[in-house]
Amino acid sequence: MTRLFNDPAAFADEALEGFAAAHRRWVRPVTGGVVRAAATPAGQVAVVIGGGSGHYPAFSGLVGRGLAHGAAVGNVFASPSARQIHSVARAAHGGAGVLLMYGNYAGDVLHFGQAAERLAADGIDTRTFAVADDISSAGADESAKRRGIAGDLPVFKAAAVAAEQGLPLDQVLRVAERAGARTRSFGIAFSGCTLPGADHPLFTVPEARMAVGLGIHGEPGIGEEALPTADEAARLLVETLLKELPEDVAAPAGQRAAVILNGLGSVKYEELFVVYREVAALLGEAGVEIVDPEVGELVTSFDMAGVSLTLTWLDDRLEELWRAPADTPAYRKGALGGPEPDQDRAASTAGARDTAASDAAAFGATAVPPASDASRAAAGTVLSALDAVARVVDTHADELGRIDAVAGDGDHGIGMRRGSTAARRAATDAHGLGGGAGTVLARAGDAWADKAGGTSGALWGTILRSLGTALGDRDAPDARRVADGVTEASAAVRRLGGAEVGDKTMVDVLVPFADALAAATAEGLPLTEAWDRAAGTAAAAAAATADLLPRRGRARPHAEKSLGTPDAGAHSLALITRAVHGALLEHH
Image (cartoon, rainbow, N blue to C red):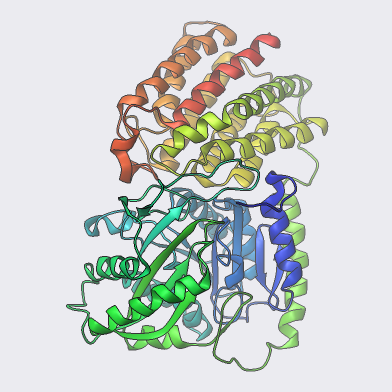
């Protein structure tokens, strides 16, 4: 378990601060993550990677020559927010565009996609690529739904070396696509991981058993088996991966492969070497030529006891990129030339000042827009509602985590607590500066997305910003305007997340809640009564999700496990609607 921490909520930020202080030769901190200490050379594509904390050396440890130009770092097991990614990408941009790369998780897809849109609006040519190497998370016919695990490294590296060779953005993307299409991973675990401040692991494995095919956040695997010997574990990993070859690889014999045996956190290096001796023997028997193998911790999961095996099937071009030298805090290979020119470092310093000034404005460190007295008064009600949200989430965080762990990774309560607490803090600051209802909600939404990360962070940020846009800062919001804002939030969440009613997500509550609120206000009911009726609808809809099978998100591969349990996001939304009703009554 994680024993050394201060405030668990500050763990990720403090870890990143310490990492940057320890590795100044390679990186410098920027808002949202780190970039190379020297600026990206003019005319070179910048490869910006990212994901949640808790996986070191991914992602910050892979920033440096021969690998990434920057890394956006989210909270523990949560994707960085779109604003964080945007900040890091702008700092890393060298004038030739940006390739954003990340593991294929819903939260990362949402946030990196939003960041790409913001970068494009800034005039920065941007592409995105999600690594999807974990064969246990979806079948070969649904490979685009697979999550990304230790296969991140060879795919990131291929793209980064191609960028350093001067290839234009679209060609760098094609290299990433080629490497991704030829990369497969599979993992096993013997115990779960415990997050900072938690008193129990995200998941457990029965004594003398192992979880097979699990994800790096503790998502359930495809099953359990008896605890193996080292050689038996090696055989399971190798045989599973050799069953699925890339379309253009007919048989393993005569093929070359980059091989990564990855420790997930608490399996010691000596244990990994014992497993690798059999991995190497088995691949040799299959006729596979191993190229520059890596044995160690490349993508971890705090203190999870487990290992994963990654094979990237090489052609001549991919082998060149895999063998190329690299120099980062956590991954080094071969020998590079002399240090990058001093003028690059000077440009980096100047760029850092420009980025910091822009980030200060983007992250709300400025005065609030003007607001009417009526809107500022309404902002007080908004602040009370957000306080009620934070309190109810805090009360039920453990319950939400338990529900989420049935078929997911168990971190929904943690993420909701981070987001709601940050939203309340940002709303308090904006209200103290005289912000109107719209500004208070918008600042709260941005803070929620930044601190929670993940899918729920993106969606709750969207909900609050949509409602803030509808209320604005000029007039006192009436019941119809609030209902219109909730309706727009419902539509925005469906556009962003792609889920619909019946998918077993928060949408199963948000849509009927919005519809009921709109209907009640259309009847002329005052806001408190209309909200009360809609909150009742939300509670019933949340309970009904227990009868649904998930069709999206991390729970989808284990749909049957969740039958009989409500969706965690739906349940938390229903709790929140009832808590907000209490705040509305107090201010009625």
